[in-house]
Amino acid sequence: MKLLSTFCCLLLLATSAAAAGSAVGYEVDGAAFEGYHVAPAAAAPLVLLIHDWDGLGDYEIKRAEMLAALGYAVFAADLFGKGIRPVTMDERKQRTGALYADRPRLRARLQGALAAAKKQGARVDNAVAAGYCFGGAAVLELARSGADLKGFVAFHGGLDLPPGQDYSKVRGSVLILHGTADSSVSMEDFAALAVALESAVVPHEMITYSGAPHAFTVFGSDRYRQDADQKSWRRFSDYLAATLR
Image (cartoon, rainbow, N blue to C red; front, side, top):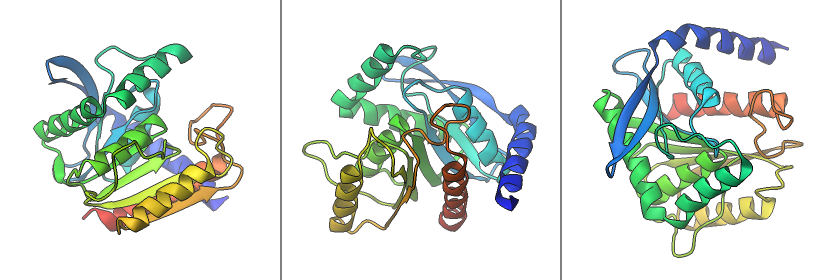
């Protein structure tokens, strides 16, 4: 009950931070993108937030506001392009599949978001990247690229290792928050990632939540699991406090 009350308070506090946020237009390789930036203070540590396969929307903005209420600046990236917010299953598969098939383009868009955040005055030298589902997979791609961030966090993200890649270039710690009942990303994938991170001597922590399916943090969906959402958010909050100064 105490945890639920705390979580509800965070949601209420997030509402007050919303006024400080704004859409941010930027370009990557000549294409237009539109992210979202919120900063409670000029020197606040940064969370680079990566969206799910339906693009940057209300869910990511709500999470950004919740993080701002905790004292973090957030730049919510746009990996699909300005105005591109897939609605149908087929379009979502097409958009994410195209980026999975072109890893250099995915990395360029992630780096482009970081550059856009820096232009907003964000502390990219004191930053963690976090993402949900597709965004979790993208965060691990950013980690493998050798991005100079302090940490990488995936909520119910894709965990498979693309051919020809490894974790030898990772420069920060990794936190994986996964649902044990996830039928899209198996526990075999989870175990394989653990082996890969350990082999590469990457500091990591990996947690699974019983009964939690894929997308267990998405408010209002039939997959939402309050217990797993609250526990993973609390662990994420503690991780940020320990990782960012």
